Image (cartoon, rainbow, N blue to C red; front, side, top):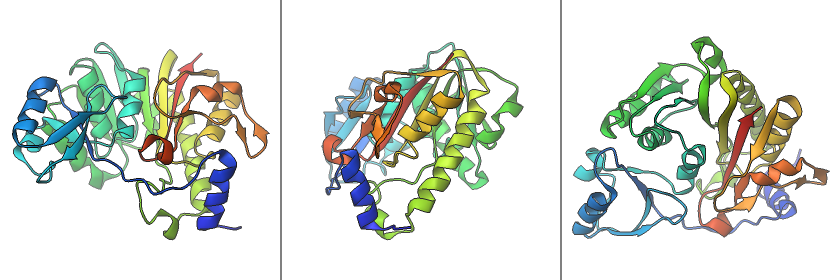
Length: 296
């Protein structure tokens, strides 16, 4: 099977995308569990950090200019903000967890989206946090403490075994392990990325979707996201979901293009157009895919 740069470039052209160099802007998510937005912005600006609002997020700011690393100052250690890519902030905003809900975070490390869930819930309700890799748990726990998150219960558990929790969730975040993309990994094409990687990830993602849908309440919401541009991990997985489960795909209101409904000549369910696909050359972000799934 053909692999390598030309293989992927041809695929992207057929999907309506291109590969162009993208300089990703560093961004943060200010943490209202610690201080108000105004006070955090004022404090950073007093240190000559130049900020601009990320227009498609609620709490996101671009770092336009700084004389130092914003991840290595007291304000960061105090949990006033989290260094988080702007596209990475969108899935939790789409899920929109509420203070009275029981929420599952399936693949948590290093905890950026977990702390964002807690912020949106105002430290109320309960978040069950799953992380499969034991060596990644300290990062999750440290970030929860640093970001003033108190409504989280962390389990060393594979999300494939979520049914063992014997719980039914109002909302689930599945930011799935994926093959990544060229914008966030400069050497992506030169590394071990090939179609076998994509196929293996897509199979794991389907297993995870199947497992966590079992613990989602009827009429509950699952947000599925990847930082992959490959349709096997994105639109084709959503077609598989629609074919095998009683679900519907609801509209994701965000930047990006609609999900692709014709993949290499295969016509997909029109509902997949409700998803969002972030092409780096169009959004100025890393590649991303976001779907909002309602269980029927």
